[in-house]
Image (tube, rainbow, N blue to C red; front, side, top):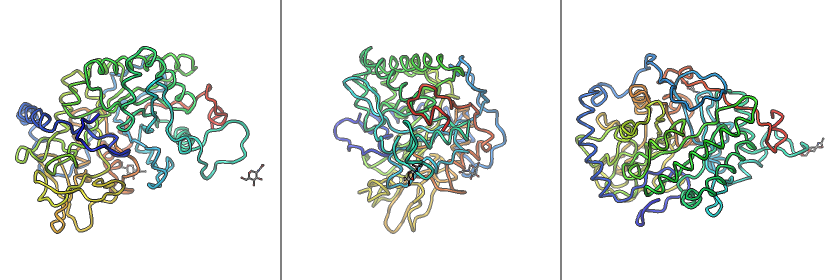
Length: 471
Ligand SMILES: *[C@@H]1O[C@H](CO)[C@@H](O)[C@H](O)[C@H]1NC(C)=O
Ligand SMILES: *[C@@H]1O[C@H](CO)[C@@H](O)[C@H](O)[C@H]1NC(C)=O
């Protein structure tokens, strides 16, 4: 959680903000890691540091990452290697954002992370946060006079999508920025962890999920890190025990949303966690924002050698850290923002600013589909692997991923043998040729380059008659 003095984040994008704590310390850590990593990078991979063209052409079929780190030994459907394409769907998207599960670009997704479930700090019980959105709202095609107990809302729609797209897995995401303070207490006791896992698996079997995603932002000590490892171990066990009761023995997946900043990474036991995880959703965004003294890039690939003030963090430093800690690259899924962070009255990246202005849903944060701001020009920093728009009249900069940068990130995933791409969050993408999800999948080699791993559509123990009977 943020230290005092950082702005209290609201529910949406901030749920995934890297904690901007101790700016001075972070900057020092970053400068140190940049100094260590950058020269190495130049020597090992010069073409990435100094690309000749910002746009990455359609990649030839690179060898796909091997899926040789699946803890799955228990059956389930066929698996082919390939990239994951993972999007967070937030259950509040159905309101102002007018974005429903039916609107998801499922042909280009392997996973949806359904956000967020919460945890009762006293008991560890995991529970859904908006039953009207999750299980109750009726949409076109939903009858009002079905008999029995039936599932509606977002979760019915997601199960319909799953039955039509057998490669689409839906994981229940638990926690997120706003609810993260609720993990500490239950994770610290055997009873709390058991209750957490039992109630989370109950939700899985009732609602038809394919796994769980744990978003604890963030354990803040070695003790809490060990509690997170113990929680993941308990969850893995309960998922496997439930799977063994099912005829088709599905492998229910377990993932985490994980930080990119060294300050938070220092407090985590990555090897301890890794043994229980199918993959890591690396939150490689929110590197810069309203909490900073200078305008900066929020999701750059590399530290800028010429303008270090503009890149307080970098994706590459985080990826190297995970790999150095023993995480196989194919389990790292690169998180990318579908939103921009604004800075006003600034000369641009690395320069002072004053204010962040209004945003699409909260101050200073703009949906990608509303960018670039009117009258702004899009700019691209080759060295930092960063893009933004700038309006010379209003002197407003917005840091976000443009199409050329998203395609370059796809190439980075391919070159480093990473496990795919992830986005926060699905409502903010553009449709059509400027979709960042579509462009990244295209740069991977199209939907055929995605990992194929069959979902589960058999939930015999659900309390919902329509889900049990195949909707
Ligand atoms: C189902 O409910 C609708 C109102 O939602 C009603 O008009 C209709 O008559 C009902 N049908 C049956 C078979 O009960
Ligand atoms: C999926 O991605 C392809 C590019 O690989 C794109 O052409 C297509 O429009 C995308 N589909 C959806 C539904 O977004």
